[in-house]
Length: 405
Image (tube, rainbow, N blue to C red; front, top):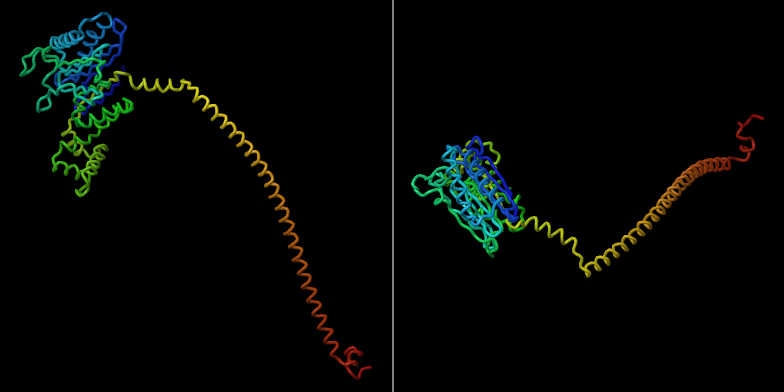
């Protein structure tokens, strides 16, 4: 088994008053055993001291005893430790605290509860709430350790312990258990907790599940809708700068959550925190069958399994890949050869183009020479024609004036 822990300090205390403890150890017979605790100290009654003290007391009087001794009754051991621990707190003025304990023996799971925290279990039946919510209408716990009797309840501490147990090998025994202080319940609806917690059975990592729960503590969703009247909801929208109520409620709620997450509008934050008390939140998620690590181990084992038919198929596939690689290599060589030939062709074409350009230049020059010769020939023909049109004597005397010998 393995446990995962998450703690979120609230906004209403100077320091966190919750205490968590998780330990997986070997008992005196060498069998795996687990002790998991959340204690929520009560404000105004030395809460931090109380929660820490009761967790330490149970560690010393449950875990350390089981490490050393063979115990016939885990139930009596746990109830005695809680009763004596409560008396210890009262006698030494160490305050008051709620308490939830899960003790996992090799064969059974034991649950002990006092106060307004909660334990959930997840099995093939789904998510089940294992403990009652013991608080009054003002949200104050009506059951706790640190006092022999509480107001309105004359029972002793031992009698006030809500206790249950179940066999680990039972078909409907839980695979996962979640311990949560009231900080979670004040910010999330039961449905949100149930849906998110159940994700751990759908191959989600327990750490991811705890992160999702914490994200809803930081930025509540359904609880905002459930706790606000229509008028208060409209006020929150106006503080977000949204007045259009024609948009669907889901989109409006998203806008409010975005504004709240940014923590820029103090009035909006004050309203929501006033509605949804942001108390310390502590979570302990127990993976009883260590399912996550087993899945990783199984995946690693699959890598080492050899199946003859698959091995032959793999060899044939690798040979095919090798042939393809060879074919690809030949194609690359051929492509290289073609590229070289193309390069030579391009160079030859360039030389040919240069020769053609030179030839064209020569032809142009010849054409110009021809034009000049034709012009000269034309002039010459005109002179001959003019000469032929003169009389014989003019031509004889070469155009000399008459009367001159």
